Length: 338
Image (cartoon, rainbow, N blue to C red; front, side, top):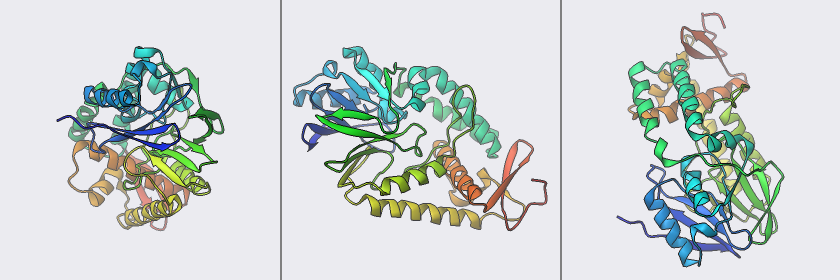
């Protein structure tokens, strides 16, 4: 069944286009800024249906894929950039994004292999059984067709200015849900393109990611996300236009809800920690029983995030036990050496 395109103006010369995805999250919102250069903020995934709906929406405004001169990728998840290579082939559009996203976009196949190996190591340390690790790997491989490598013409850093729809928009580096996630902010109209940083009805999962190519420390995703939320709360925002779902008209109230959610989840997690400690997978089983393989990976990522947040606060500690890592509450130290 063909999804009907939905395209609406949200500001002068700025349009939201809702595109279908094959993912559980549902449709993705992308944004078209008319004028010079014609700019698309995010693209949707690489599927025939997504492309057809995007082309229909563009045609309704008098454009084709080949007319797009610039693509701004907010973060390197397939539902947000997967169609970028197709659009670039049509008309030679430039891709702009944060430097942290370049490895994924520029060498998609090699970076996928590196990430699959990274997640296998994460799952092993989390205590996930080998058979379930294999099922998760198979689920991850099914994501491969939804994006392609695409060259990055320019990188965008915190504080950079980008002209969209005839107005200057400020780049905000807001890591958390993804390590290279950026938002775009227009202070005069108090508009925020928040993509997956702020979603009205979904709590963005700060995903565990590998360290940058060449070495360095792995980022603490939830710790970064909390800091990004607190920073965004300081902005004056009339409307935040997200990557999925409806617009946000009270971003501070939403951020308070998100912070409260993470405090509650961290509190619930603490209740399952004992003196002997638990692996991440044991915690996942206690908190989220009966998950399919892909959601098991997301749950492992979420639990790691909350444990690292509690670790920064001095409330939990970790230690190795064979291949696995165990976590315990600080007030109930483990018998094994730290």
